[in-house]
Length: 73
Image 1: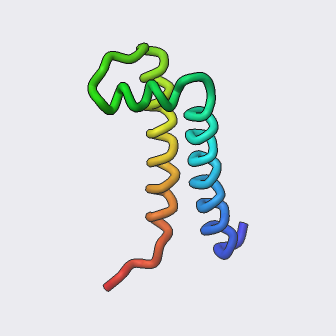
Image 2 (image 1 turned 180 degrees about the vertical axis):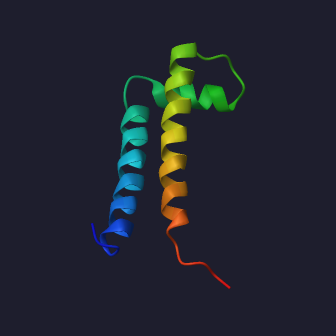
């Protein structure tokens, strides 16, 4: 793997995790459940675990991509 492909691969990872989260939110009533969760209403434990996992996966991909950005002085 060359260095020029690393940023592209990291960007694809972020895009893939974003797409995964978006598709999950579009299924069933996940978007409505998210709104309830954000309004501090109780939600199903399995739903919450999935939401948290998808969020961690996305934030991890973003963090990995940020680590590869050139450092500003």
